[in-house]
Image (tube, rainbow, N blue to C red; front, side, top):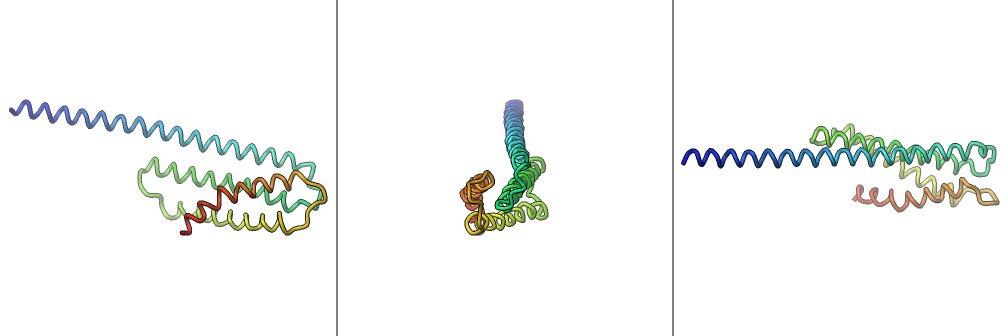
Length: 162
């Protein structure tokens, strides 16, 4: 009877170890996919910022839409900073497996608060500031970014405040 019990215990331990090994393999695949996603987003936003600066390079002399140009460049820079903060928090959670320190959580929240304030400045820039007589690239880009922010950024902000 003792040999049968010992073998049953050994089989149970073996099953538990196999299950734990499978969980680790899934966790590693998840970590890789998270880093690939954040890396893809970081490359995309950085490429957009570089392209925007290149497009605006010859157009800074026009003073009627400088506010919108600055708004769109800062908006993209804030998105990159937000992405870096989110990557750091996610990496901490995946590596440590514990809760994230409060100080590390403060920076993303401050960036969120700055983003909402910057979005409100975008309302003023787009709808209340006098603009150029003809449509400009800066106005079009700023409108796209403004409405993206309104639909994507405001929903998490409302959820966090409720």
